[in-house]
Length: 377
Ligand SMILES: *Cc1c(COP(=O)(O)O)cnc(C)c1O
Image 1 (cartoon, rainbow, N blue to C red):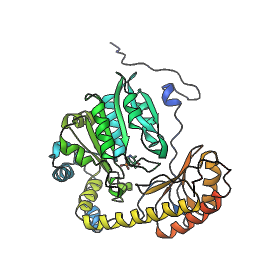
Image 2: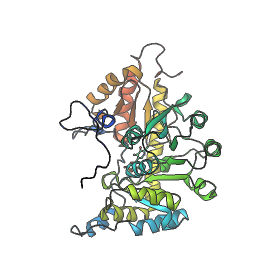
Image 3: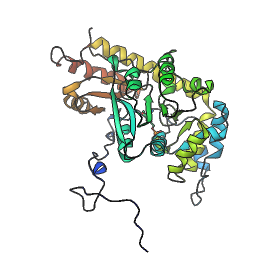
Image 4: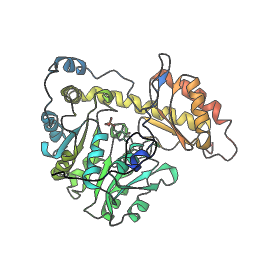
């Protein structure tokens, strides 16, 4: 007997019937690939070569004909020790974006709500839509910071997942530990709260929320912390991210995962990177210093740059965004414009900094009087 499971709906412009909410999504646009002469400052990548020992370990992992270890057990074990949670409290994904998708799918379906601040990471709206859930976007407060009071107030009985991004991509500010603690005390304990700390290693503000602190308290099993090897560790090309949290929540994520997505090479590179912590911290320090220098100089030039705690800075270019991004591009600087809102510029090679400053200082002068991008300087 023919059995029909689930339905299909109509969407125009496609040769087949596609879910209308999926059809309505804009096609994915990656940060532009840079030409040989250009600096690619559009994807918050790390400008450094892989950490010492990493390439050798990846090259030695030659079993191309074998499937990887499905749960990346060695890496889970290692991270479990680091976070004091045991391997069951760690879940590895092909990038933490894939874990975000798993967690959203595991918790939210049609009619449910997935909440996050906006503007924030561009993947969040897409995650909600693909799960068939409704996205609830809570506007950032002054200073381009999370408005956690407004987020707590926006919780309904359909809320299933809340994503808090600290530091916030693309605007830069962190959520403080005190703000997060107050927020989590307000949110019903059966709602998943995802603390997305993709840029945690670059944070220098001592008041910032730390996933470790939240996990160590043990008081909030509904919080899952997300970290990645893509940014500070410079392994974006190998796709490794992880979640730390309650084993049963991570089981649910695993149930929605595409099996065997994390490669042996990714796992090996992550393990090797964890063994050279000192070199990592040194590089992260260099980037954080470069970021502070860049942000300060941009403010000096007249830009109203929000607090920058990731490896990027934000120019609130508003309606001038695309024109200004074009000016950067002409100068060989590939940046990430968000039309009508602003421009995110990654902290890249040292040689890119002066170039960024030169263009930024020249275009800020052309901003109309009263434009939000202008600082008080
Ligand atoms: C870069 C980023 C991630 C993770 O990227 P992966 O490469 O998939 O690990 C997650 N969240 C935010 C906010 C990011 O900017």
